[in-house]
Amino acid sequence: MVDWIISSGLVDYETACREMENRVAAIAAGTADEAIWLLEHPPLYTAGTSANVKDLTDPDRFPVYDSPRGGQYTYHGPGQRVAYVMLDLTKRGRDVRKFVQQLEDWVIATLAEFNVKGEQRDGRVGVWVQRDDKPLTITGQPQEDKIAAIGVRLRKWVSFHGISINVEPDLEHFSGIVPCGITEHGVTSLVDLGLPVTMDDVDVALKRCFMDLFETRAD
Image 1 (tube, helix red, strand yellow):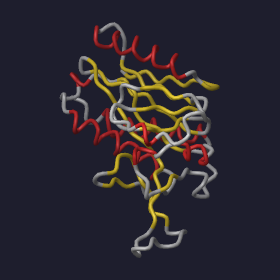
Image 2: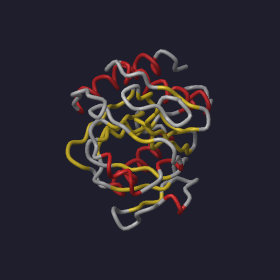
Image 3: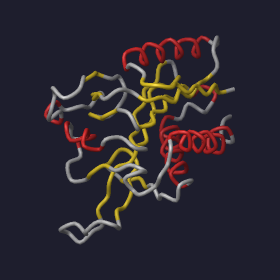
């Protein structure tokens, strides 16, 4: 059984991390069910374990938190759906590569619910969309923008942290960092792509696609 928790309002980042730590410990001890926690944070930046301080270009704009997740700098804020994924991989094959692939597939399947084609790119973390509505790059290739980030950590084979999908955040807030250390591409959101999607719409799609991808593959 996987508990689905949806928080209304904005959840403090440090509070969320403490709650995750407690839940992960309980899952590892066998005293709590796995959980997916859907929430929004107030505007902030997080630095993953591979973050380069040079990529924090405006350190005074928002609070900056070190995070134990993999990856580099990312932004969280209102209008972005964060899904913290607390799953026991001892029940799911203990295959980290497969698990990360499932997370990416989950995001891509969720975007497809809104007729958005999300794609992965070698050497670029996250999920990307091709912008056919923008001019070609100087190399003649279509522009690509990032729409979702992925960053996880495992403790005793239980995952925490997870994914974030840009629904309707203030995209200008990403300008205070080099998102995930990538300078030559931008960021986008579902609303930026012209889709009047609500957070509730995204939550329904996330749950439906999760059941299809994870529950059917769990051992």
